[in-house]
Length: 203
Image (cartoon, rainbow, N blue to C red):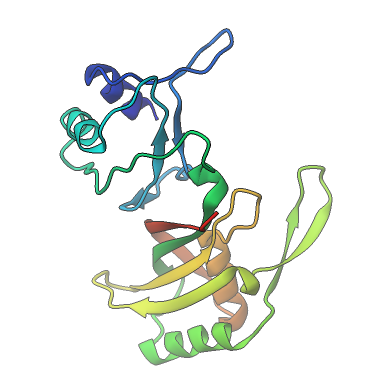
């Protein structure tokens, strides 16, 4: 957010600010990235104090951003419309996974994926904000899961589409790993997490 804050200021874009003792620019990511996660599919909303053409906004902002941080699309949204945070439903991730022991053959990995997709329930336990323990069915938060060709030795790659709602109904990369460990009986480690895209509902 600080990177966009600086870019917005340098581009002289008329950004709106929050109220209170410490006003900040109204820059709202649909879903903040976890530390260490890379992405090519983020959605960020900027509230302005006056109208700008999307093309002009995109050109001014892009000129102040690093070359490895491209803007793929800019749209104008009515202030009364639901926010991307409210509309967010799904996220697609690519995971690079390391094996704690010998690398399993690809046929076994494919069989584990098939086992996950064939079942309707894979449970885990999590703590609520109040400290209570709650059982969560991870499987119902997973929509697709497939194996990718991996260029990393002693590792394999998976792509999944999962729930990513800001009401707490989301499937974290670590939970996909947990499902894999449950069906395989083996231990794995996440080497890299890359978010491909965020998907909004219709609202």
